[in-house]
Length: 451
Image: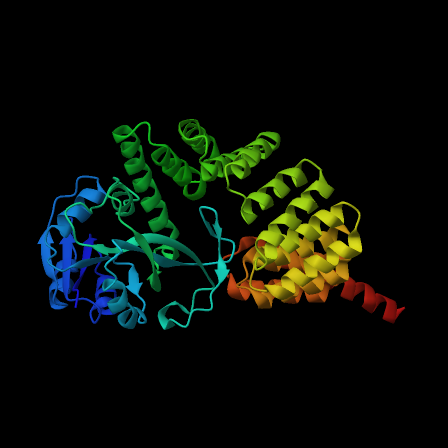
């Protein structure tokens, strides 16, 4: 029976490490934990879990660190996890058959990244409603799957490559090995950390990515990865665009880089250029639903509403599970003058995916624009119950009631908002204004009765 080792690198992972190790304990024959300079209890936790521990230098290179951990593995196979990940319980029964396959050098494993809302994306992948039976993850509303080689044979020719976004996959391909598809999950909780923690990690990864470009200046993937961090995580489209452009120059068939060049151009308001980049992406084989959606967004902002509607139809055909495409189709049709048809799609999208805040917002905006204020007010209040509301959501619901001169309902909504957001000065100031109006209305009513 082939043996399996869990190989990890950690730093200050005390908050996660025990649960991570426990998730894999029954599935592996040995555990190697390499610490890169923790000043917490990470090493103690690892030792208590039966791991072999070692302290290694941190040289701003994830591959170097992981490969130092690999040197201490004695098992036939290696499973790589990070401390903020958990091995799915179902892996225990599935691993023996995978390890017994002599024709496979490594396996792509699906990593399920939990995210705090349905609006999140990882690269070109959209979030899905969370229906996982895995209990520790059930509280999160959505997830995004991606794949990476996390299970591979221990062999001198198989090691991690890349200062950041490191992988064994390249070495498997370079050595002529076969990759299989594992039928179990790794659950990842790193994307539901605090905003500060995520921002620090992004800045750190950007610095490593720049060093990776220095190491390999003609590597299109390295330029692409820095562009992704600048655009998706640091929200700096102007800085991101040159990296995507360079990636496309180095590899003109890099469809994903063309797509993200289009995203950066869109963010900068360069809509015609974005459409050209999307055409290049699709010509390079990146004809995804999100590419069609982005084309729709660009055409919509150019006022080409019927063309945008066709783009959104294409997106919906490519991915029938994403309610955002139907919602945007409804918006484009409404702006094109097909009001009844458009509203029907907007409302159906909300009914299909009531946990997505942006679907509610789009419908409410259109109803206000069409002066269907009663419907807009009702939908704004339904949103408060359907998703976790923000202070702005209470303000919006109250403002629509105010447009209808329904001051009592507006006050009730503002008070409800203050209960949830007691520090919101805007809610309190608006409530004062509404109560002043209510007192005036009451005074006029009394005066009329007296007369």
